[in-house]
Amino acid sequence: MARTRKSPASKAPVGAASASTVAGGEAAGSNQLGPQILRGLRERILGWHYPPGHHLGEKTLCEEFSASRIPVREALRALAEQGLVDQVPNMGCYVKQPDAEATHHLYDLRLALELFVVERLARSGVDAEVLAKERAFWEPLMAIKASAKFETAELVRADENFHLNLAKAVGNPFLTESLEDINERLHFVRMAVITSAHRVQTTAGEHLKVLEAIEAKDAEGARRYLRQNLLSARNKVEMAIAQALTAAHTKRKR
Image (cartoon, rainbow, N blue to C red):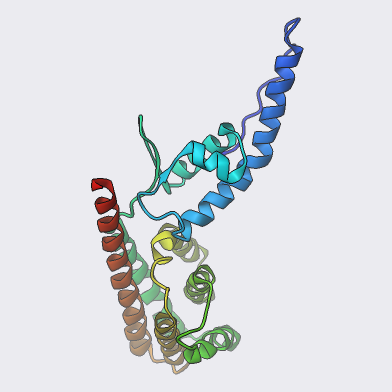
């Protein structure tokens, strides 16, 4: 989130009191609305409410958030710094197009780190409570009905937490930090994957197999099931990216 810099105090020139008051009031409003607008836009982008390539027009956003242009511009600038928005000169801001090559590389790195995690836990052991908590969450999802409604954002976070909790159990803070960074970079594109009850069941089943292998101290099995889980997810993500890029390209041609 962009930090608002405070300008040093200075005496207003004679006759400029009213202008100063107005400017101060607008700045105060910016300070209050800026974080709210940033949070709202970020949630809409990460939730694909605003799909890749979507034009973020200042006038439209001002109307949506009942705000002036200043806090809207601050929010867009912060989103650009976070890598979620592209600022195109003379054209405005657009939701960033996902980078297929970067996503592939991130999954390669994630796979290498997490294979180490599950092998270490299977060979060295892990607190039974860690496995029990994850099992208690994922087992009920195996019985989810096809018509069931669920929050994609919550399940994506739950999936990320599954992998992070296993990494934390290794006890290496640098490993956990690396995976957290990768998750944040991938979060946007992964929101387009867990969109059906079938996918939820598949993910739950893959997670439970990983847990069973770790508990049985089956390092090879843990690696095999973890690889299956991540490669399946990567394939789904890359398909979603391809579809998003095609849709954005088609929209631009109209």
